[in-house]
Length: 112
Image (cartoon, rainbow, N blue to C red; front, side, top):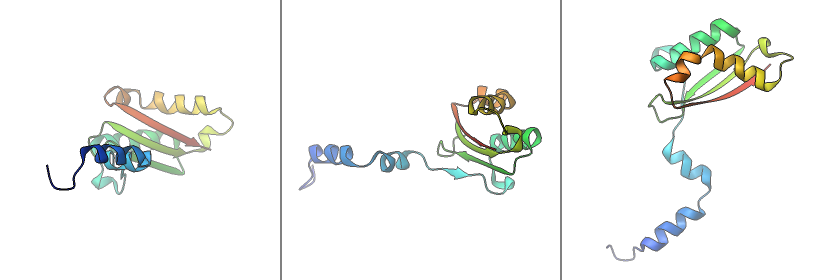
C-alpha cells in the first residue's frame, strides 16, 4: 500500500462527490454531429424521426459512452402541438419501436 494512501479515505471522498461528477466519469455524451460520423443506430433514429415529424430541432446523443445502447433524444416539432407529453413520447416510441427493442434505453424530451 503506498505511503499516505488510505482506502477508507478514498471511499469516503467518493461519497461526498456530487452525483453528477460521478456519473460524468461513467457516461460521456457523444452528440450527433454530422451524420457522416454518427453510429448506424443514430442515423436510423435521425432518419425515422425526421421523416415522421419534420422537426425544427433534433438532437440525438449516445449517452452509453459510444456503445450505442442508450440514447438521449430531444425533438421539437409542430406535430406535438396541443398533445400531452405522454402522447408526444408515445408517438416517438411508436416511431422507433424496432430500434428501441435493440437498445438498453432511451430518454426522450419533446417540445412543440
